[in-house]
Length: 190
Length: 190
DNA sequence: CATTTTGCCTAATCTGTTTAGGCAAAACAC
DNA sequence: GTGTTTTGCCTAAACAGATTAGGCAAAATG
Image (cartoon, rainbow over all chains, first blue to last red; front, top):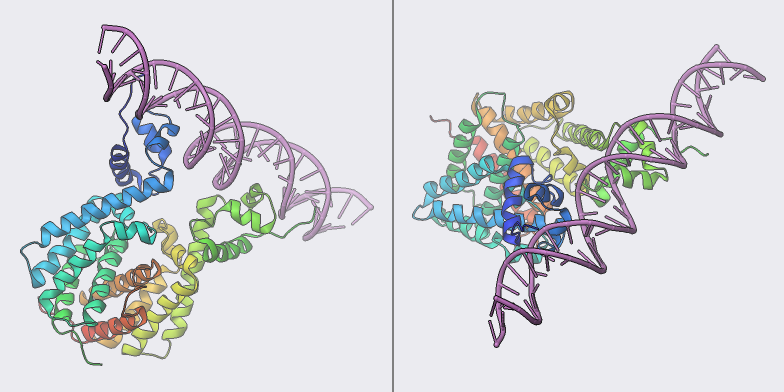
């Protein structure tokens, strides 16, 4: 019988595309096997189980996102960097909804530590270098930015901001302005 | 045979508790039936299908949350109201993780419009009354606050902020301070 | 008490996950 | 090139969850 040439790499990439097309939750071994024209059981030599597949898709998405952020932020500082960072997040989520959902898949701590999560945290802090915030304020700010980016993108892609003025792009721009202003005048008083 | 007395109401409440115990995704008809000591098929006279069950749990959670917010915000204004609102969200998420996840379940637009989502939006705007923001700034601010609250709570409950100083409560307090400051000095320039 | 309603059942189908074992294609050894 | 090992994909099978159809007895209604 003709072999399709399945590999773990292979499956994970296809799984990521599948997730973008039909949703991360629906990117199952069964559907993936169908796409490859292969029996479901055949996947199990390449991924341990359905959870393993999802985990690998999540790690792929996190790594892609970290690469994109890293590229966008390089050579920028201050508000420029903040905006570049934020836009990479948002654009990635809009272009790759399934992968973005995957990036938010709950990994067990060990797996997460081995993945690109650490790079994300480092880059977020790098951006704040331009704002001169001492600890613990820097950490508070990191958490705020992480919350806004992930929260906004989530609500937006859930359709929360469509069908009503002003349009989402305008709010996004204004929110980034506001965050920049906030970081420059961060209330450091006890 | 002894009857358990299933009702739609009944199932949805139990489903919500189940979600808090084992996660919203795991709150399935099969598991619910097990808890009631009935066969899975028996649920189908009360809920249309698994998706319908989840939708109803989501609507329950949204209504509970709206009630709690409404009670907490009553009689408060400005920063007081902001903090009360935010804390209801966060406390609800920490106490009822499954229900909170349910509240973020994607409803189709008609269902969402019929549910408590509208009350949430109204209350959010009510809070901003204390900050004197004209449109479209008010809408931008609503979207920012929604993003921060849901994003923060999401990251926190995913364990993103544990295992590292400063602790989450401190960041939360500081972030609310910062948001209050931001709203009072919202950059309204074009 | 008779009848209608209805709650939960059994039975059956379908789909997805996962394991075990087999056979042939590919890769390698010489 | 033939012989051997590896391995990719297969079939078969067990099992669990979702869902539908139809039945029977308990509850509600008259």
